[in-house]
Image (cartoon, rainbow, N blue to C red; front, side, top):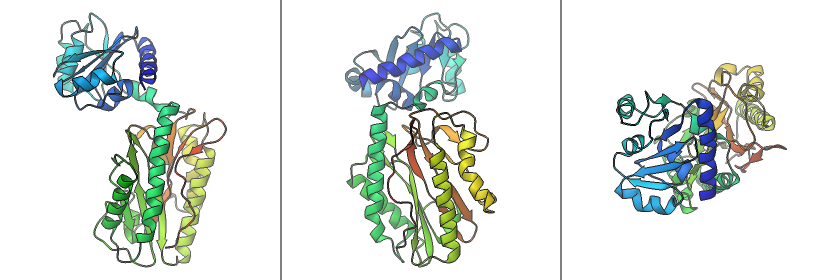
Length: 357
């Protein structure tokens, strides 16, 4: 995607002018990858307001860098940030203030050629990353398809006696068999009363008849993360369980239906949250409605009551309302989708009907 990487660096260059900087030193690995295509644990990228770029990495990645980043200068150096800061020239240099340690900031400020203290710019590249190109969305689509299929394939094994940890392992294994690089994150599997904990870690607790099982998981494909949550029922549901599930399903549908370019993060959250609050469960839904997703599992924008900003076109997000009843269990339903002008594109496709296993 060299042409895409060039366009991404161009957008960063334009933002530098507005920010009052003449160059930026990019040190966050996922941002280096986004702007160059290089996957490395030790790399830095210098991008100037004039559109020039130079990449520094050490001997372990240098050969790969020269192949992947053939359109920019590659410098082989262990001290990647120092090598690039010293080459920037007498310019106002910006750095990723949200990523760079204070000691490293001071060391770069002392480099010959750096004009004054570096300018901490937090989230500049992340802002560019928010709107995805179609190549990125295609990778997300594949990650979500793997996730969908893994869920469908594991359903038959969910029965009384199987443990939360065993379900998580089955999901992980099936995603790998279907072509995932690895799980996108540590899967959540919560059965029965454990479902009242939104980020419960799977344990050796066995599933029992008459319980909800909530599974929050996703596949990683070519660096892009999928994220999906489904809650299923093991055995016939009680009235309260069916009512709770239908409430969350209605709220999740309302949230998905509200997704459109231009909506605020606050209003999108409210589209789902208001239904849950009106049903008397406002105190049982405390987390935000969702988040952006891409090269990281959690990216901007974040959707919540106090979150700023508007959702743009071609922004992948999750919509994941939940209701959690302490001591009884909970329900969460989550999809990954992409904002589109006409209507959102759902990337996770499996049913949101209550599955009774």
